[in-house]
Length: 429
Image 1 (cartoon, one colour):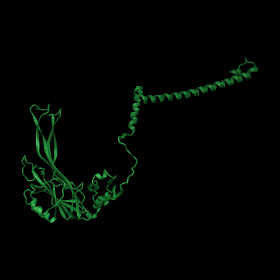
Image 2: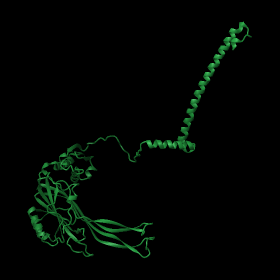
Image 3: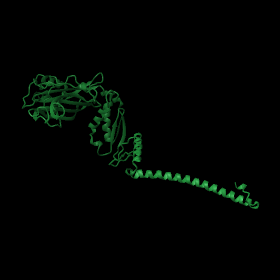
Image 4: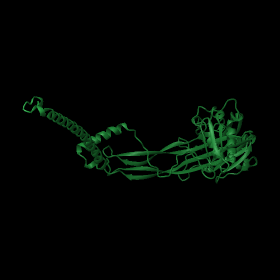
């Protein structure tokens, strides 16, 4: 519009035109600068507001706006549903996670034994390496792995790894060789368990018995030749108080446990439990106790087949009598004012012996536990078929005969974890 202003003298138009043009340019630049500054200021302000909200939420979540707290809670719940659950806790004890340096200050060495020649023969059993582990602990003892020079061992179905001194390594190697040796693969052992009412059978057998040490009080052990054992068992069969608890053909496999058991469960009334809202308002709580005889034999033949090592674990349990206790019926039960009930308290007696024996393979080990609680049949009769007097619970002497039966044509399946049920022999009255 200023180009058409005719009131301005002609000699001043160029100067005024320049001033007006430069002035308009300055106002345009100022407007653009102001717009840019406003945009930057708005961006900074929004960021500051958002940052301040985050600070307020973290510092004082209870003081935040309720709507904001609910939104935060929903966001946290959604995030927690997707985040992995961790159970890591801080340990109280000081823990070192870096790999240890195995000290050899006592001459320890690292050895790995291939036990597959043995485990392959018993591959159908769970944890076939377990008998080797058990016999290593029998040979070396438990303490040597927990005290003294640093040492450990680990076994799976393929390899036995041992870290210890040379002396312990020799003991371990001796046990492993006895298991992986193919010569003893099919070696079997026999065990007979008999009971007699009195221990006077010794009077006729004294000349055939050679005493060996026993640690368990009241027990005795002897060695005798196999021919003499056959004569002694034949003589004992003539006694009226003689009872045999195993088959004469019972066999035990080399290195694996075999169990002979007459155990059975005896039920009794343990307590009366109040059950409000039900009729008659109470419940009888029953329980059971194990009663009978259980013997576990674990034999192991030496490399030259001249000596036998065996661990024998015997346990006898007997309920001498059941004590009755009369109780008033619980309050609130039907007929509580005029009814009573009775619970039972078993009077138990037990005997246990666990020892390791070593003797020549051409002889028989005879082990007498002494006069102990007599095993009872599942029917409740005593070993001798008589009804015991309440004042005199039955007693008997348990006698074991253990010896080698030599090689058999096929590897024995008796013993071991999976075949224990097949080796349970019940009372034979």
